Length: 304
Length: 251
Image (cartoon, rainbow over the protein chains, first blue to last red):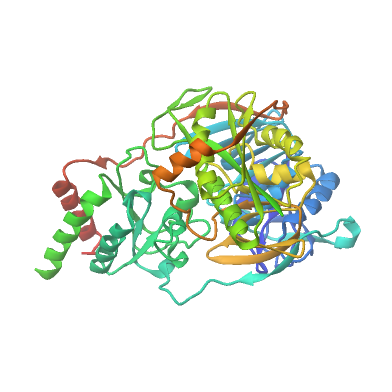
């Protein structure tokens, strides 16, 4: 099976997902990587086609189409990330696609994938006829296995005869005024299970007692209950400290991608919540009933 | 200026979902959260520009009743027109829905078509990008703010880690929203009931084309977590949690 990897570049840097996808591709057969923006591609293992078409842009799907015509891959791999999905989803108007994929295999010339769907609660096994597209979740393959020495071929954008319809205007960097949750040793994180904005105060009190900071999952940020700088997950920050205490967070794939803390303790009323699969300790309880008791007990210990 | 927002239904994950090898049977459906953000962003654009907003709800014969509340909510927030599109069969293939929808939308002359970036059941494609290609319109997803000026839309897109980028697209265009630029507006129950009574919903039946290439082999529940879950009264579990915090030298 021949596999084409779409290499993702953000702000001039090859993203780690690219190496993860190459690691996946290597297991399936012949592979090459396409990069459509200017970046140092030298550490990508194997053949690399580089087209310098400016910052990553949804119209780059046209470049991928041209490279598909030229290389005839059986499978095209994309990362399940904001920029790559823009391109993958447009190409999937013509090619079969599977999304939220965490495992890819090839059988008798067909592609078999497993997708973690329904907020991480159901695995869907799919068969795709080739050529096909798989959009693979971050963290599914080991990036180190996709690193090596690149053999690079550069193509001028003019040679491909495709044009731009969408203009990149610039990056907007995150504000750094708030605490950096990615550097905190202890993160007390709240999700939909917290129920009400007023309950966040109690989570803040707990965080303070534990010498940590408060963060939240997307629904909490969407509600405006915590600032954007406190969001954990795919579009927010990745926490890497000693403890991630997940309170009322179900643990959908896009959230768990941002949880790289050494220890996860989760509290949730739903025994089937996917967050328990990445936890070292799981407690089935209503956060709002548990929090007052927990805060009282810890305060006693601290004061005692 | 005329904007439409697409509103799909997804299984309600709070309720039990029956998982069989060849099908899943949800207890109830609810509006796709990301689509609710697309509707909200359309309403925000109406406030900013005076645009006309139409909301297109999509359901199938099995779940169409669950769509009414979502459409009523859109009406209560200020949508000018509502469509209830009932597909002739359920499908997990986004390309089939996108094809039927592209035909339906082709004569509506929308300047902007908004969808949610994804749905919890999108394992076989994401609607927005596919729809854009079938309609031959520019596309961008992952958007958290939409503005319109001089025949263009300028959007802010999330790139992860808190980084955003700004892009300019000529109109008409398809834009997939991840979050509206403000929290979803709260609609009191009485206002929702009133809106549902008054709402003028045009029902449309759409026939789905059959598109081959993707086949579900099976559905399954992921393996149980390897840890033992702790249950009990609040005092008991609080003590267990404190014990764990002590083991980690956090307490």
